[in-house]
Amino acid sequence: MNEQATTAANADDALMVEMRGLNKWFGDFHVLREIYLEVERGERIVICGPSGSGKSTLIRCINHLEEFQKGDLSVGGLPMTQDVKRIEQIRRRVGMVFQHFNLFPHLTVLENCCLSPIWVQKKPRKEAEAQAMNYLERVQIAEQALKYPGQLSGGQQQRVAIARSLCMHPEVMLFDEPTSALDPEMIKEVLDVMVELAHEGMTMLCVTHEMGFAKTVADRVIFMDQGQIIEENAPEAFFNDPQSERTQLFLSQILGH
Amino acid sequence: MNVLDVDYMVGLVPVLIRYLPLTLAMAVAGMALALVLACGLAVIRVLRIPGLNGATLLFISFFRGTPLLVQLFLFYYGLPQVLAFLTQINGVTATIMGLTLHFSAYMAESIRAAIVGVDRSQTEAALSIGMTNGQLMRRIVLPQATRVAVPTLMNYFIDMIKATSLAFTLGVTELMGATQKEAAGSFLYFEAFITVAIIYWLIVEGLAWFQRRLETRLNEAYRR
Ligand SMILES: Nc1ncnc2c1ncn2[C@@H]1O[C@H](COP(=O)(O)OP(=O)(O)OP(=O)(O)O)[C@@H](O)[C@H]1O
Ligand SMILES: [Mg+2]
Picture 1 (tube, rainbow over the protein chains, first blue to last red):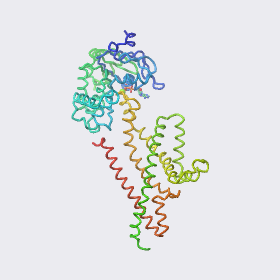
Picture 2 (cartoon, each protein chain N blue to C red):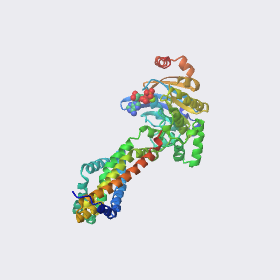
Picture 3 (tube, rainbow over the protein chains, first blue to last red):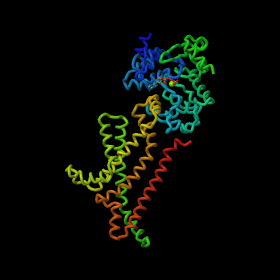
Picture 4 (tube, rainbow over the protein chains, first blue to last red):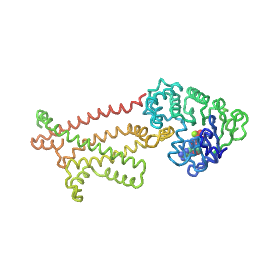
């Protein structure tokens, strides 16, 4: 099955994300150790673990914001290589939402959303704008389309960031702690959008400590520590019956207070 | 002390204004060329292009490390002695050349700083939506860097307008050269130089007004 997936001509049969023996170093620091991960199309994965365990680094390898040194990674059957064209090809399939939104401050909300459709997918401006308005409506922020990011609240900015990603029709979405820079009263509006996205069948990998979200939508929860995947399980089993001591300790810490 | 000869000053204005176009032309040409050169130098520095990076550092170091007047004399009087094809160089050309090289050295550094100052997270976001390096430079990094660099670049432009007055030492009759000639004829040095000072001052104030408008426009997206 794995052999097949990496070489599959028909991308629809392939795993959405597949990591086989992935290793990464920052200089001497071994940040990802022998990572094996298979994500099916439509699967929703939540990744958690202590600070510095390599969660961000792991998902940033998927769209090549980080390079890995050893192992194999493929996205929708396309193996990641050093080839610029291949990297761009993979990036067009992968949306990413960042902790600090990373909207483009010099462009309006609408322009933020139209960049990729116009310049990457070469759509006519009218069509790109109509489609962007569609997505902005879905994240319930269409009325702010002509404002600049700096004029929006954190929660609104993060919803725009999600819309900006969706505008390039990604096959998989990566979320790197999308709510941890938000004031508590704004967390829900972002999680609601993510839950809706999950229900629509989007493949999602979310680094988050929002355990309520994990219980509601995740198919699997992955626990990382010191660059390794320590444990992975369905949310029910993960929370009620954690296997490793480190997972138990981590869960007692984040659920404890 | 004699009373200020106001009539002479008023009469002098239209005489001097005739030389304003030359002054402005030298400044605008110098600025345009300096901008192009500075952008090139800044890109070399940002990308650390091997070989060129060292040459660029040396260039910047020399043109920032020596007086503009020395550079102008070097081009106008010095270079033609060693480079035969430069014998035809006239004062205006030498001035534009000197202004270009001198100011591009300063401007390269502020453009480089503005580009480097754009947060890495902006580049990552652009890559994540599939943009190429060229596209994200053009659409994301440079527009944001421009906003940061424009105030400094405008200040260099103002400096450059004033620095064109040095052309008079190369025998060019621009605003300053013309004033010098008028003053030598009338012996009314104070009146003549205060008049030309006011003309420079007004030009610079006009530019400062334009600069404020430009900055307001560039900051539009950042207003809360
Ligand atoms: N560019 C880098 N150079 C060197 N070390 C880095 C770099 N980026 C991350 N690291 C280190 O790699 C380790 C993993 O970082 P990573 O950001 O993936 O952790 P994380 O699990 O996402 O943590 P957090 O919950 O704090 O976001 C950390 O120890 C971090 O200091
Ligand atoms: Mg992280």
